[in-house]
Image (cartoon, rainbow, N blue to C red):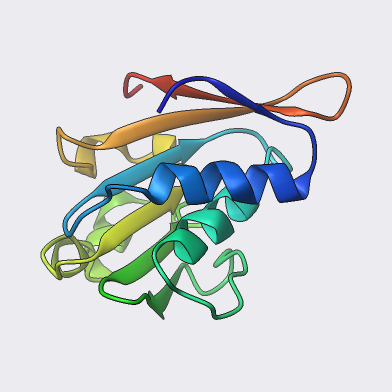
Amino acid sequence: MQTTTASNEGEMIDAGRTAAAGMQAGDVIALVGELGSGKTHFTKGIAGGLGCHTDITSPTFSLVHEHRGRELPIFHFDFYRIESAAELIALGWDDYLDAGGICVIEWADRFPELLPAATRWLHLEMKENQSRLISPMKGP
């Protein structure tokens, strides 16, 4: 994915939908950005692009939401409230990575050491005009 600007929630969802093109089983998408930068809206677009039409909300308190797409399951994580790598592993992290779906992770920079080398990292940044800049990045 190349750097993209989204001016509103709809454009953020569209950017996620575009990013979903070509995703395949085992892909891990790491989203990094401050609160309100659009991580969940971007994930809504990914899910829609993969044929999932359920309500996509932030898994802040449940830590992970599982969604069924047209062909692939989508595992939507929020690492914000996870306290340690051990807690993430106890949640079944390795099982999710091996489940043949797409893992989309909000606040992925909290545990980069647990993400596969092929993880696609994206930085979401709020701009002064309330637009969002979505940029590929190397892992932290």
